[in-house]
Structure formats: structure tokens, C-alpha cells
Length: 327
Image (cartoon, rainbow, N blue to C red; front, side, top):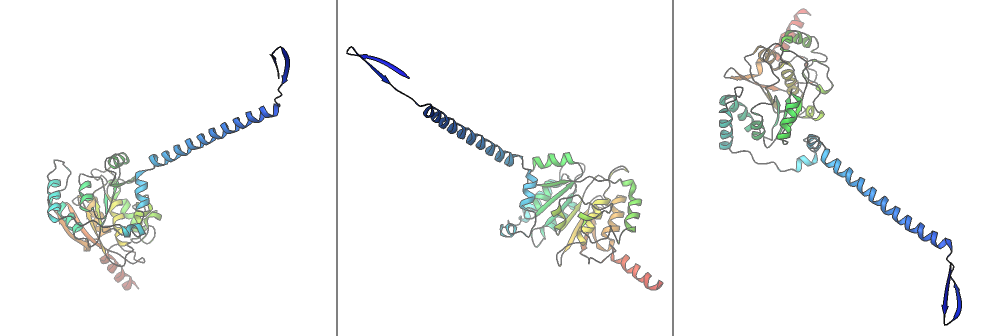
């Protein structure tokens, strides 16, 4: 670059040379700095977006299950157990729940039968309920110290209910049975009672037609203290019927992993054929404690040895005696 300048009449020529390398280096340095800033900005954006997506799209039920996957975890043992509800509060809840205008709600005597068992638990109860009903929130409240899981046949209603009440664990199950198939299903189950349909097993791996095997894994690892069968639908021959839920309740009760303890199993609508026949077959008359108002049957089922192949002791004794006579 050349610059001409006249000073005091004297013509002095000053020549200033700018090496192209200097300009190129400055431009390269500026471009490199700018690129690094853009790269940092892009990485920060995607990092924040990923974290927000992870937080807001994680399934709440999955989060709850991962936090409470097992009652034996260290976190579960250090959490403080809330005190039991006062008897006056329990009586009030049962009283108002029984006065609902819902046609299908339980009577005061039926509600009290279940609430009395929950209240007498010597430790926080594990309560498993088949069927989302008018009483679901009542069961959750009465068992506020323990674990309550609800199994529902209608996946849309289950999702809707859990959205309204995220503190309630609801899992949907598709029943592939019809009440009209009762005799056929009982026959096939008896034939496989020493194989897929045995009374002591982990149903997660079972292929018995009456066994529910698509619940979350941790459900099968829990020793359930109380099981209430009030679903699925059982009215009419085309309804799913409660064969699967009653059979599953019987297996879960007999397959407890704890050394002791019994499972209280309640079957609602016991006056109907499916509930009464399956109750007698898989929960057994010898375990029947009472039937409230002809509607709610209360069974107390003890755990069994893994080598047992008869649901009811009376039938086991009869079969053994017959085998000795034939021998």
C-alpha cells in the first residue's frame, strides 16, 4: 500500500507494507473464535433440551415403580412409617363411602369387613385390588401406611384415573376369557394343576390360561397381605368374568415368600356362579371365614410348599386316600 503526503513543500513518500499473512492470521483467529462460540452454544442448547425431555416425558408410574421396586431396598427401610389412622377417622370414611348413590358401591357391612382387616395389620399392609371401583380411593386412604396396587381391565379408564390420582398405582390387564367359558377353563386348569396351573409358582413365567402373567415384575415379588377381587366385569356370558383374578389371587396367596403369614382374600359378588365356583375351587371352602350380606366372601389362605399340587387340603387328603386304596 502506498500513501503520498506533501509537507512544507517537500515531497516525502512513505511506504507502508502489510504482509498478507498478518491479515490472514487475524481473519483466521477471529473465524476460529467465532466457530468455537457457535459450537459451544449448539452443544449447550442440545444438552438443555435433552435434560428437559428426560424430565418431562418420564412416565410417573415408572418413576414410582423404580423408587418402590422392592420393599426390601435400603430406601424403603429408612423411610418413616406414618402412624395408623384413628378409629374414628376410619369409621367416618367407611360411613360416607357407604352412603354413595352409586348403584354398584359396597354396603357399610362389606366395607367394614375389609377395613377391619386392613386396620389389624401388624405392619404396613400390601393390598392388591382387582377392579377400579367407587371404593378405590377409600382403600388407598385406609391403607395409607402400606402399598396399594389396583389392576383394571379398561386401559383408558386406568390411564384417566391415574392422571387424576397420580399417587395410586394402577396397571391395566387384558382378560382373554368369557364368563361362558367357565366349565371349559376349569377343566383345562385341573388337567394342568401339576404343570402350568399349579397352586405355587411365579405367574410371571406361567402359561396357564387362568394365570395373569403380564403385570409388572415387582408385583409378583410382593407378599400380599390382602387381596380384593372386585373385577373385571362379571355380569353376562360375554363379560370377562373373574376366573383369572380369583385363580391369580389363590396362587399369589400360596406362593408367599415369607416364612409365615396368611393372605386375606375377599371376593365381591359371591352370589354369582363364577365367583362362587372359582372361590370354592381356588380359595377353598375350608378357608372361608364369612360371607357378608351374601355378597362379599372372606377367605384366609395360608402359604403352601412348592411341591403342593392341590389348591384345597380336603381334596388333597381325599386324593391321597384314594391313591393308597388303589395301591
